[in-house]
Image (cartoon, rainbow, N blue to C red):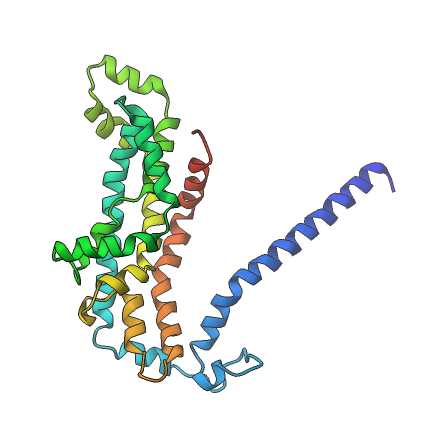
Length: 282
C-alpha cells in the first residue's frame, strides 16, 4: 500500500468513526421523542410495563381521542399562540431598539448599563417569581394572558444577540447615512432594521420556542382553566385526585410540539445564525 493510499484509508476510517459517534448521540437525544411517539399509541398498562415494550399491542388511538374531546383544547391552543405571538412581537420590536442603542448610540453609562443587564442572566428565574407575582397582583393582571406576556416581552439574551449583530455591521454604512442627513432614528428604521433580518429571525425563533413550551410562568400566573396555555391545560385536564393519565398527556405533548418542530425545520438556519452572532464580535 502506497503512503497516499494509506492516508486515504485512515481518512475513511476517521469518517466512519465520526459518523458512528454522531449517529449514536443522535439516537440518544431522539430516544425520548421516539419513546413518547410509541407510548402515545399504547394503553397506560403497556406504556408503563417493565422492561419497556416498543410495539403498541393493542394499537390504540384512545389517547388522541381523549385529547380532541376536550372542550377547552382549541382554546388552550389559541391562548398559547396568542401568548407566544405577543412575546415574539415584543422581543423583535423592543430588543432590536435596545440592541441598536447599545451598539450604535453614545450616551453616558452605556457600558455600565449593558453590564448590569448582562448580570441579570445570572439570576435564576425562580428568584424573581415572587416579586413578579406581587407586581402583577397589584396591577390586577393575574389570570390574564396579556399580563403574563408582559413579563417576557423583553428578554436580556435577545438584547445581547441584537447588540452583537448591530455591532458587526460596517461603520461606513452609518457614517454615509449620517452625512446624508439621516438621524439615529431614521438610520435604525431604514438601515439597521432591514439589515438585521437574520438576527430578528433568530430572536423570533428562540422566543417562540421558549414561550410555546413555557410551563412554570403560566402555571403560577394563570388560574382559570379557560385562560390556561396548552402545557398547563394538559396537566390540568388529566390530573386526577389520586393518579394522573400520562398517555393522553404524552399524546398532547406531541401535538403541542408539532408547531415548534415545523418552525425548526423552516427556520433552523436562523438558530444557527443566532449561535454564530452571539459567539462573534463582542
